[in-house]
Amino acid sequence: MEPIIIEGTPKTPTVHFDSSQGVFKLEGRSIPENSVEFYKPLVDWLDQYKENPLPKTTVEVKLEYFNTSSSKCILDVFKKLEMIHKAKNDVEIKWYYEEDDEDMLEAGEDYESIIRVPFEMIEIVE
Amino acid sequence: MSFNVENYFKDLLTDDVIFSYKGDISSEVINLILDSVEQETEEANDPPRIRKKVYNVLVESLQNLYHHVDKPPEDFKDHDSKKYGMIVVKRNKKGYNITTSNFIAKGKIKNLEEKLDKINMSSAEEIKELYKFILHHQKISPKGGGGLGLVDIARKTGNILHYKFYDYNKHISIFKLSIDISALEKN
Image 1 (cartoon, each protein chain N blue to C red):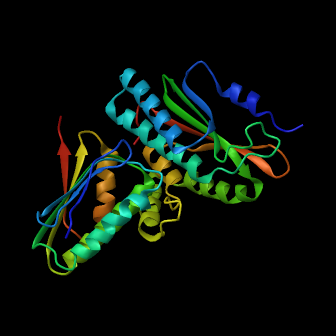
Image 2 (tube, one colour):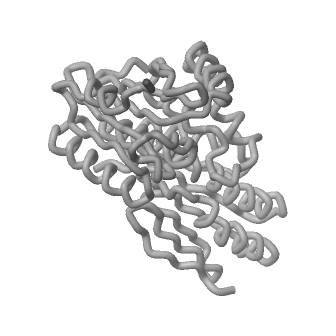
Image 3 (cartoon, rainbow over the protein chains, first blue to last red):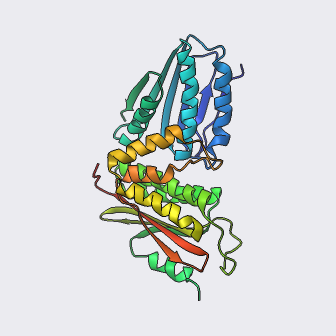
């Protein structure tokens, strides 16, 4: 499978999804006007990946900002991970949030309550 | 005579305004506004959590305009603009205020008003649950939002969403939304 490697922009995150490595990354700002356009390839990629996943997949989400339009797309990404997890593979989501950013921590907890995948909340201390 | 948008906008420009814009809300304009206000909040040396709230609310406010405004009426001077909106950002001792204004077809007012009233009558816990419910159950609209923007703003600010509709003509109104971001958080 071809990896997805996308450089971040002021409105879209850096993406590093590589099936040869078990750690996928989503990092930066996710505030595009059209989030579906940005996330659809990632969701499609995971759909393919789930057919033959690694025994352990870790997804690191380190977002500084995301808009509500991205929030649903991120949920779609997590739903794919949930399917991989359900098929008895090891999956973990590491949700990073900056010190004092309670909004970002709460956002992670929202996903944790919806998606049946182990989450780890990690505070980034400056 | 119809509603005077120029005077309405002028009246919004009080001494504590740090940023204002009226015109077409394109993706590029959104970038410029975000950069400009982000710089202002950095220079003001506000705590990061307040700066982040302002940024988040600004993103949602601008993208609400981008996705939902109605076209200006024919007799309006910028009637060619497809996404005409106004935004004013204020900073004072109490914190920040972001006020957006846009044209809205009168037929859409009832729905929007019901939504805003529902949010304003909900407790912080209810808003959190509402956010999660919409996130989980509502399909992404072609516009990408799915109606989370206002709920998110209310959740992040913990404040009432003040709004008002002004008659422009028989068919169109101006929708004003005023959002406070308190310097000292209540939550």
